[in-house]
Amino acid sequence: MTNRNDWHGRPYYSLDAYLKNTYGEKLYKIAIDAGFTCPNRDGTLGDSGCIFCSAGGSGEYAVKASSHATVSEQLNAGIALFGHKRVGQRFIAYFQAYTNTYGAVPHLRTLYEEALCEPAVAGISIATRPDCISDDVVTMLVNIMGKFSDKFVWIELGLQTIHEKTADFIRRGYPLPVYDKCVALLNRHNIPVVTHIILGLPGENKEHMLSTIDHINGCGTWGVKLQLLHVLRGTGLAALYERGDYSPLSQEAYRDLVIDCLEHLNPNIVVHRLTGDGPRSLLLAPCWSLDKRNVLNTLHRSMKLRAAYQGRLYTERS
Ligand code: SF4
Image 1 (cartoon, rainbow, N blue to C red):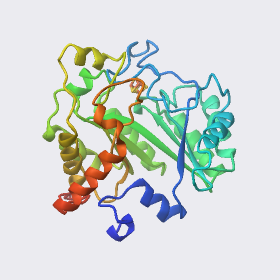
Image 2: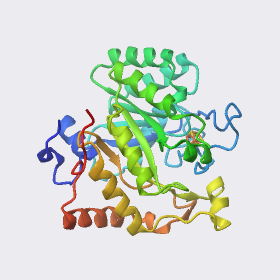
Image 3: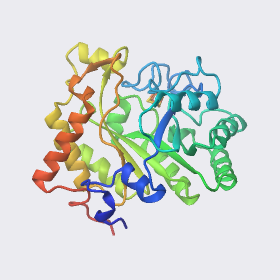
Image 4: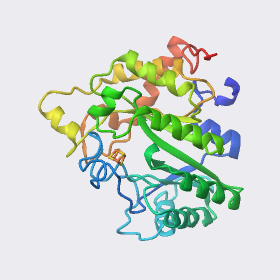
């Protein structure tokens, strides 16, 4: 059970707070594009991807595989991008673009081990889909966790919503029980799970989003990313937006939803993100999201004014 004194002055248990408590410093993420694709794009489940996903498979911040062929080269190029900015000595290698467990297990192992062998890497975080985590992948992960016992391995799962109607509409491509089963499997092997949830999906209201929070509260996820739905150029969502069939959230509406979600969130769950991450070059809307500092400052101010904090309205299920 976390203590609010461990939250470093924030009204929620942020990833920064967790890292400082655990490693004594903030660790920066280096996004990797390891050359994967996704079953939702290569024709296995579909060829258009989730309606919000850009052609880069949500990996626009990664150092491109084409310009830096190996994981090590990408990591070193990513570290160099920090330049003279004051950062700690260690980093998280974030396998971000597309579905990062969608490949032959020996190949996956080679990529992950290459990252873990880098002295500056404290651990890896692997973004994927729950229908792409087989028993063999888990066995391999357990194995490398044993081999690199001073480093960590996290799995990030794109759930987005628990509602099947929305999941069909956004073309997620798997039903909720697949996520639940995957989290249970990863929990059994002590592999921490970070769940991605999107706020503002078409057809969803506050009650839909709070029931998604309620579900993850009890399912065994260790962390959560709450993300704003962005309209990115070239996506299915962009077509809806341009036809006038989708209106993005206002900053005020998003702020209020985030506060509601945090107040209902289990206070032990680590909050990895509270904003979106839409690349400027592709973002059609909402443009207010580009000023992340303002979004977070406004959120923190509002939470202070309302005396709101993570878990204030959370009730443990018996
Ligand atoms: S599962 Fe991920 S990478 Fe694949 S289409 Fe959806 S958002 Fe994009």
